[in-house]
Length: 360
Image 1 (cartoon, helix red, strand yellow):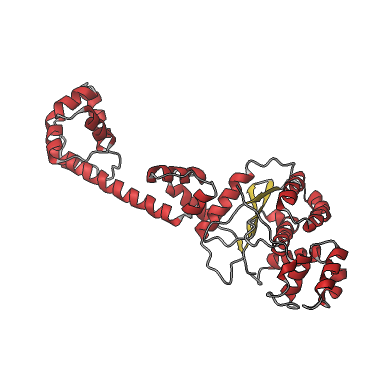
Image 2 (cartoon, helix red, strand yellow; image 1 turned 120 degrees about the vertical axis):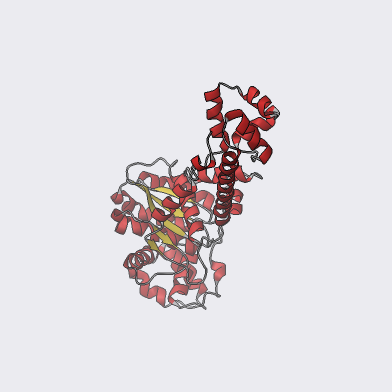
């Protein structure tokens, strides 16, 4: 007889796995086994799958059927039930760490009232087979260059979730081979789109321009806890991706961030790092400083900088004329003036375009 001493406490499979092995050994069918232990077929199936806990009465019947001690079965079931409880607690803790409501709202995962389905859907979303694999991927994927917000707290799991959706979308974008020179040549064309007020018009054009240069361009809403405005990533070795969030829906924020991301590709792209833009600036990071300068100089070329700095809050008509003269939106000019301190952030914001956009 197998006794409790023979039980290996590291087992985590349901006791039904052991029973199935013994059915094979004794030559019992499931129906015959059910009759021997006095259980209907439905409950027998649940016993084999681990959905029914082994009580004393069942343990004694198993002992008489297989010559395996009742204590063995009770201990075997106790370990499994404890393991299942810990597993469910771990799954719940993991799911609670994710921005689930926004993932559902944005259509990244299906709506579901079943926690098991939700768990499986989230693993599929992250292309992970287990929480352990997800944790390993999460640790490896944390951005090396991360512009943290000075005002808001940022949740790394939400940021990772946002980047993962960008990765999912990027994998479906067909591009020509990555060509840094072509992207540089495309900058004037991209800049010309700053005067277009409708995202439905300029976004398809941006996607094509970037794809022709070998860059996947995706727009992804930010879930709660993620304050990112943009990112530059190499999800695939030879295929860079620019991610925009439209978190700040004004034209000055959008275009400054976009050219900032372009800067990372043309200036720093060979490093194949992840550059993540938030609401603040990491001033000690030379890459971020270079990207900011690049973006500013694309939007307001150096030869117009002195003329820009003469503009004040009472010069809104001059701001409009200046923007038209250099070929960008008036909101971009205002944003630059606010950034350098010539105009308070509370003034003249009517000059900015507020984009209406969704990723539906």
